[in-house]
Structures are given as structure tokens and as C-alpha cells.
Length: 61
Image 1 (spheres, rainbow, N blue to C red):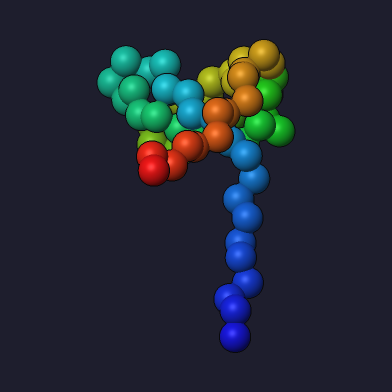
Image 2: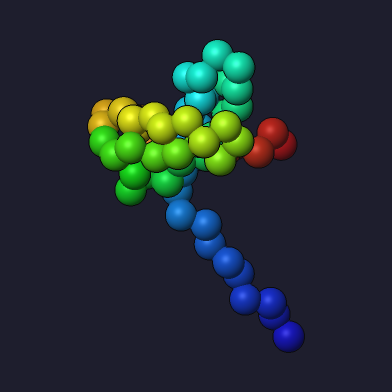
């Protein structure tokens, strides 16, 4: 039996701007231009509206 594959929505990584936090957050692309809360320090930050699409990972063969 094959296990169902769970697909995660595409996301980009941004850094929390709070100087005491600076955690890297995975933000869904649907959140572009919106205000989100850092899951570590609870700081509110605006996701850039022109956030680039993540580049696909290339396997080194």
C-alpha cells in the first residue's frame, strides 16, 4: 500500500525583524502583503507583497 503524500503549500523564508528574536520563519506565499505574527516572539510583521517564489531544490547527482 502506498502512503498518501501530504503536500505542503509553497512558502518562503523571512527573518523576524525583532532584534532579540531574528528567527527564520516559513511564510506561506498566500500571506504576501499581509501582517503575520512571529510564532516565537509574537511580534507582528508585514510580509513583503513582492516576496519572490522559492527556488526549487536541485539534487546533486
